[in-house]
Picture 1 (cartoon, rainbow, N blue to C red):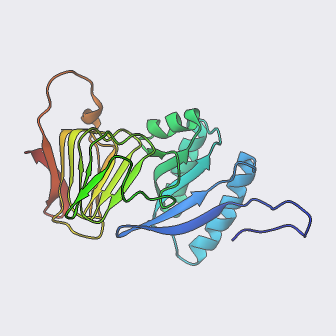
Picture 2: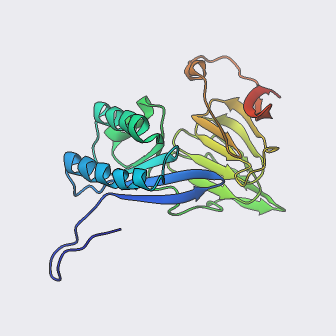
Picture 3: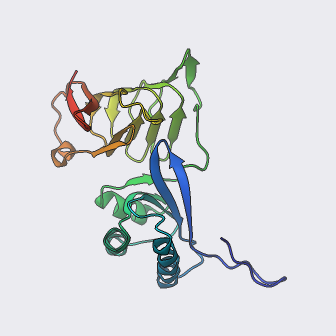
Length: 242
């Protein structure tokens, strides 16, 4: 809900929490307007979440933070993420921001970063993408902030950079390096697979299953990596060589 002042006065910006659908996953989008001071925004957020807790909506939900161009230091963001998890059971998975310092703070917490809110402008096809049958072919690298959504299989001829997201109702195949977020079987198909020439994602999702990249996946090195495949085995996402 957006509150407004009396006629002739400026609109009053408020913290907003909106449910949104990302495949079968229960997710929320939290917007903290730049007009508000940080402490004021946190106060509004706490009040809204007390209402949320009373209605039992949001418990165990995944949350994306929309911070816009707000500068949030790593310490502040860490405290907010931990508070949301401990007090309300909400798991922050991504941050929307155009502020470089805030982006770096999010990456330190291994959160996905976007330049625009997910669920805002969803791209079913991007410039230079060609469709054939039920597959979408993206010949270029998917850059940070880009979001590709398709009702079928998605094939990426380049890389998927950190901060980029690919959602497909079918499989996802990345010829290059997968560093961003990939969600295959987004409408609940646990048979979907994610295949990458170099599997180094921030997060992979298959249907409602979620797995983060292992710690050692962030290591450097110039050695050749073999293609790998992620699929659901025994109720969990497992990654193995192709």
